Length: 108
Image (cartoon, helix red, strand yellow):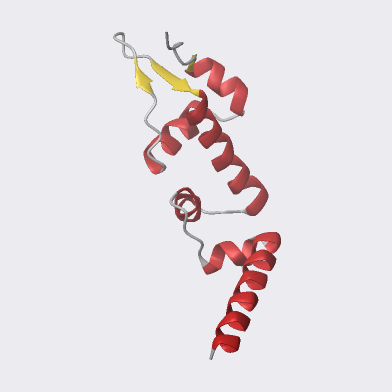
């Protein structure tokens, strides 16, 4: 028998994430974080959705990402602006790019 996934009330999500109600609403809209509505119209969130909220908060606070850049991150995209703001990511990207160029030049 499958165990039901735990759902968190909005007040719990606010405490867990440190985000305001307005920011959570905005992030839900901007990053397509669905949440669940009860029959009474109250919002509930699963752990995965809370993790997305926390990741968005981290990217904004630690890396200075814009909403557009956070959306790109969630879509698996990397932009030049993201690389400029994130030194470790840029270093990894440049190393992979260098290896790739070396592989291509050796095969020619």
